[in-house]
Image (spheres, rainbow, N blue to C red):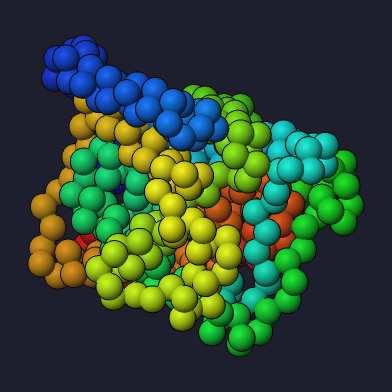
Length: 384
């Protein structure tokens, strides 16, 4: 493996250790007990659903960190090195999850798709998000699991991401007023079979085009094992999220809710005067404990799962200059803001959107990729 081509946090994890590093059960035991205690408390005091979703989140975090399944990194290595392995792994994840999610949506009416309206906000938000995720070296899930691994930049970005997502939600209705159409759900229009067939054809065409451009067609040998087992594990866990929660895996909404709760508690925000947060569903979540929110509980689990992996293999990072910290902080805030405008990040818009048949997921991908091309130039300019 050429570790020089990986981000420092991943290169450190991939490089051979100077001496064998046994799993540190002494370090992992307190966290394991804390997670079990929270699971038990949720099961007893909240609901079995929230307790199970905590475990799903822990599994997601451990898989993302353990497999180093980075959506941002996969796009970056495709562009800079013409290495499609990461993107091929993401396409495999999309195909597997679509094959499970679409029939589930068709047969279980209590489940919902990750639908977002095609809109001006989607176009702008997806582009800006793709740009900023390369500067910040993480999307929504990437920021969570790298913060759990102890990477300083992502730890600093996490609260800014939440703030940006909250401000984006406050402004969302103004953005939608610029132009938006009704969400389009392929499962609802064509049934599970038709939607799945169209999705798999679209993914196959993408794989063919990427293989043609990179000179490395999709094959079993073209995808490293970590991308394969990571895709399989994430597909299973995301499908469980849909089955247990009744909604697809998401990240961004939880961040915005955290920001809204903080602003309300500090007396800086009146939700009754805002179109988004005065909506009955959002207002109810704002009035309840975070532990009742589906997205928040899985986000907490992702942090815990990544932290559990970090006990064995801590994240690493190079020292940043003051300018890099400032640019990274701005990028983190804009990640949150733009993801709310785009109705999700790589998880909520791309993965959950496409796998549940939302047209907005297919619109999000090319706009975010165009933003990535610009973001990589900015990243090189500031020497991240």
